[in-house]
Structures are given as structure tokens and as C-alpha cells.
Amino acid sequence: MLSHVFHRWERRLAAAAKGREVGPFEWGTDWLHTFGDQPLTDAGTEDFERWAAAMVAESDRYYALEPCSDYELHDGRLTFPSAVQTPHAENNVVPARFFPDRSPRGRKRAVLVLPQWNADAEGHVGLCRLLNRFGLSALRLTLPYHDERRPASLLRADYIVSANVGRTAQVCRQAVLDARRAIAWLHSQGYESIGILGTSLGSCLSMLTAAHEPLVRAAALNHISPYFADVVWEGLSTAHVRHGLNGHIELEQLRRLWLPISPFPYIERMRGTRTLLVYARYDLTFPVRLSKMFVDEFRRRGVAHELHVLPCGHYSTGVTPFKWMDGLVLCRFLNRNL
Image (tube, rainbow, N blue to C red):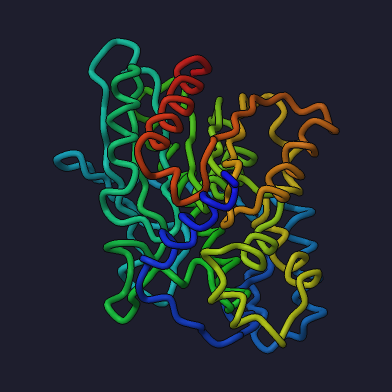
């Protein structure tokens, strides 16, 4: 009975989002490059699959980061160039909001915060201020194609998750490299203990970042799944993306092509990183079956982690009192482990 109540509420909250449109299916290989920086334009699906397997096998090269010294901080707003250049100039500059904690502990401990898909400019700002209350500085990153990074022609941040398979992979990689550059800046400012916190899509990107960034000491992953493709295929929030994929690709192939941007291949790389896994008992966007599968894989491999299950759904996590439950769990974990 409780499940029925929450699921009905979740569907009502999801329906309030405007602008979801079914986009055309595209392989999007023109967005991808090999390690030799050769484009995959007009490559067949077999070449795409070989590319994906190679990126997973050599993920240190896939997520390799070029040094950057072109950071600007003004009135709490940090900007720097993205490590990935896309066809849209707005998206190639990364903005972030800095919430420094002035206490002695806050000057040494910082958390990079990655909000959910289609978060607006105020998304997770309250969480950053709550982190300050725990003596943690916070840097809130704007994801690719979100907010001021979104071209005027787009109503939503659909370029980061869409039926264009190659573009989705590249833009998610861009988000990880942006996160690594943000962490490099925090380190350059004297922060000795750095964590990362991500929600929903931000959770996936946070794990990819933590798995490839040695400066990350602790990762709080808020809503979880082992596979990027399965969430898109089954999730309530991505039903319009699934419609664009239908009839063009099967889930098994999509899972292989999006494996470089999925958490599953990188679970072993989380050894030594203090990790919190959070999922919601009545989630229809990150289906609970997938979240449990992810937790079970951590357990099976003996990768240390903490687990918290929220008594709500995905969208209702952002509603009182559940947003406070969630925020306190995330902040307390990071406070203990940084």
C-alpha cells in the first residue's frame, strides 16, 4: 500500500517537468575519438563497440586530464575552460559556485558537489550551505549543457542524456573531466582532504570521477545504478529518451556502448575511497532492482562501503522531510570521512 502511494506521488512529481521531447536516434560517432585523436565519423556499430571496450580497458587514458592554470574566482564564482571542446561555445566554459567555510577545519576540507540532471542554478545550493554547517567547504559544479552552459536553442539539458549515443558518452566524459579540473583547483587552494557528492546523474559522474581521481578521499553517491543504459531504458525520468531509442538498438548493445560511462566497470577502483551508497526504497527513476544489484556487487567483491536506504522515492527525495533526511546522511558521512 505504501509503495502504491509513493509510486503515484513519484509519477505526479515527474509529470510536472516540462519540455521533455522525443529526440531522433543517432549513433553520434562524430562526437567520439580514438586515443590517437582520430574521429569515428561514419564508423559502423562494430567499430563503436570496439571503441567502447578499448575506453573501458584503458580508462585512465579515456579520463586523462590536461593541466589547467586558467582559473578565475570572482565573488564566489569560479570559471575555467572545459577539457573537452564541444560545438557550443557556452558549454566550453565551466562555472562553479564556491561556498568556503572559514573555520580552521573548513579551510582544509572541501567537497565537490554535482547536482542531478536538469538541475537549475539553485540546485544543491542549500546542500552546499549545509556542508558549511558541518565545517566543510563546498564547490557546486554546473554540469555540461546545464543552466548558463545550455545553448538558447535547447529547453533542457538533453545533450548529456539522449538518444544520440555517442554524444551522451562524450558529454558525460566532459563532465568527469570538468569535475577533475575543479578538484585540481581545490587542491591548488590548499585543501588537503577532498570529497565528492553527486545526486542521480551527478552520482554516476561522481563515481566515475572518484574512480579516476586520486585526490578524492570520500564519495557520497546519492541514487545509484551499475549501468547507465539500464537507468535510461527503465527509468521514469528518461521514458522520452527510451522512445527515441526504441526500434534502433537493444538494451544489451546500448549497455556495452555506454559501459565507459557506467559505474560497474570501475567498482574495483573504489577500494581505498570511503564510499557511501544511497538509494530510495520507492524509486522509479533509478529502479530499486538496479540499486540493489550495485550494492550486491560491492559486497560480493568485498569493496568497503556504507549504505543508507531512504524511505521515499527519487523525486520525493527533494521534498520535506526527506530532503533533510538525505542531506544529513550525506553531510554526516563526509564530515566523518574527510
